[in-house]
Amino acid sequence: MVARPEDYINQVEYLQSIVGKYFPIYRTEIEYDIVNLYVRISPEQDIERPFNDLRKELVPQNYIPHLREARGEFIVSVKAQPEQNYRGIKTNVLMLLITICTTLFAGMWWWASYDPQNGGFFTLYNLLNGGLYFTLPLMTILGIHEMGHYMLARYHGIKASLPFFIPFIPPLGTIGAFISIREPIPDKKSLLDLGVAGPICGFIVAVPISILGIYLGTTMGRPVPADIEGTFMSINFPIIMQAISYLMPFPSDAMLHPTAFAGWIGFLVTGLNLLPAGQLDGGHVARALFGEQAKYASYAAAAFLVIVGIFWYPGWLIFALFIFFMVGLKHPPPLNDMSGLDIKRKAVGVFAILLLLSCFHPIPVEQITYSHDFSFELIEDEPVRMLSVNESAEYLVNLTNTGDPASDTYNVSYTLSNSTAWSVQMFIRNETEWLPIDLNYTSVELEPAETAEFKLEVQAEEHALPRTDIELKAVSENTERKRFIELSVRLIYSFNAEVRGEKVVPIRNGTATFEIDIFNLGHQDVYNISTEDVSREGWNIMYTYGEQEGEILQINVSTGSQVTFTVEMSSQEDDTSEFLTVYAYIHIESQGTGEYESIEVIGVRTV
Image (cartoon, rainbow, N blue to C red; front, side, top):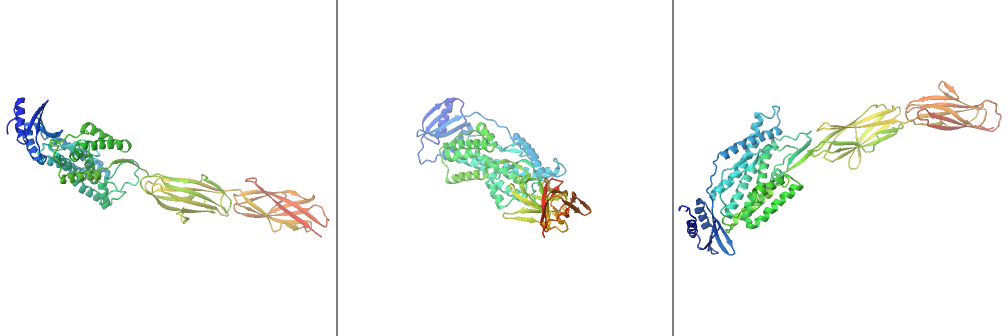
């Protein structure tokens, strides 16, 4: 190989001699530090092979050639680059070791959350299982992803570094890895190959790891604790993981196995890298497929991240800033931007787009709130009811699962403070009718936002005590949280009074006798009996109840009881009238409420 000349004039001549071996030169122009050599290329000429040979001859001499077309002319632009010195692999090894440590710590964190033991966090059990089930699969996915790039770079003769792993804090432990491409990419074929190699290799490994993780989560799965509450971060499966979990059903109430989470990270990294923005892997693919038009795909990808970041997932704003300031929106052209892609590589490019769609989720992580709260409410806000004997009161109660996202089972029961002569029947409503519940308790399972309707019928029977208090209780089986409704049913001061038999009776020997019944429908009460009015002077009213006798009477009547007292209407004088009618009004008054009834009795004498 001819050595690179030091003086500028000889450098131009040197470049003309080298380029002239592969392409006929008809004009040379110098623009600052760039030498533009105008060459003749026929339409049927294969330019890929000669240009690649030209590149391999100039790059070792620190010259970078670019083949482009401008205004119908073909130009080989050559620019000298300074000698570059690169560090050895010590940095790669150091970053790898640090990343292994951070991912081991993350693996311990995940395993301690997945399978908590009494030994605490820093245990050999957590270290070994976290390393086996999280660190190893995650580092395998990321390592093979980057080695895919590295091996394709070596295949195309492009200088590239070994992978640099990036450590990060738990729960991830790493945010990926990258390789450093140390010279411009020769052509569209190598650009596409280099772009898709990493995502395809990472995807090929992430699929079986995800299958294994979901299988382990199914066979040795840990259920989400029934009493878990609070706000947590939840991951959303991309399409590929949804397909895997569809073929291998994953319990909805099970925690995600750490290996499945490592697979999820692998798909996330694949999807992120395939975004057609700047110099991401997807940017390489887009530039190879669409040429200069790929910049519009890059703008669209960045705008998409910003819009989704503002309205749905703020994390994309950080990634958008990373693209804006670190990666850039524009992709430099390959050295040979004129050679096209063969049909196989175009098919691979389409496959890369399908990979993006299957691995990328616009909202990969979201906050969810676990709540096992529920409401237990009286529909009509009348917890205290007043009843007469043999009357009943109805209470309607709604039990609603206001938690999310899990279902819960509730035990509903009631207790009476006083059950003597009080009957209670509980019902639960189905779609069309009320179904009686034989016992004083029942269980019902409710999905989030689902409501069960209950009805409680309370009846006061004869001889019921004046009051009973009812405690309705609902208990969550998941959390043992309780809700109470306090009810109270009381007997009112109510009675009925009526004449036994006929209220019109004959007067015999100057006396008419009646019997009056008092039926106490409510609380135990004392009734005052007296005379309101008598239609004829000289006639007296006397009352008799048991051993009590007098013109005024007090009778104590218990709840649900009936008593009978006698009313005797008699004349103090000898009334010799042949036809005689005497009206009297008996006043019966409750001491409890002051309510009263007037009973009319009539004595009649005819000749």
